[in-house]
Image (tube, rainbow, N blue to C red; front, side, top):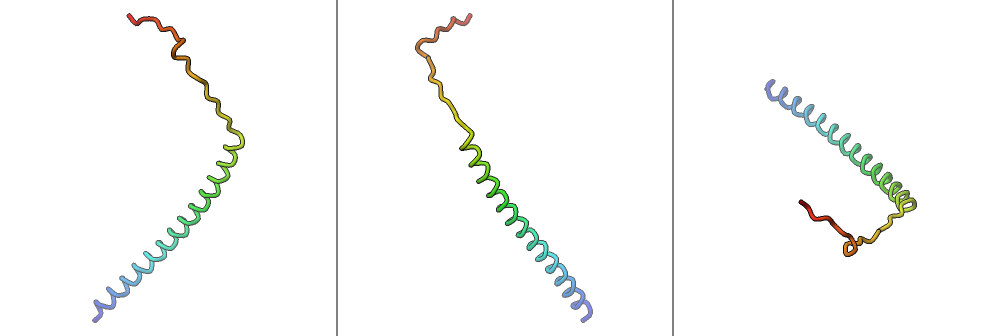
Length: 69
């Protein structure tokens, strides 16, 4: 009977610690996702306001190339 009690208490201790670690992990995951979502939204607003790209046409027809040796 004594052997069963030791195994049961060890199992309860193991699962308690495991559930606590899973809970902490879930909390940190949610915190990280929310932080990154806010940061991404902030960066996209800054990029759209300040970036202006220009596209220059290529003059392929007018370009003259020297023949390779």
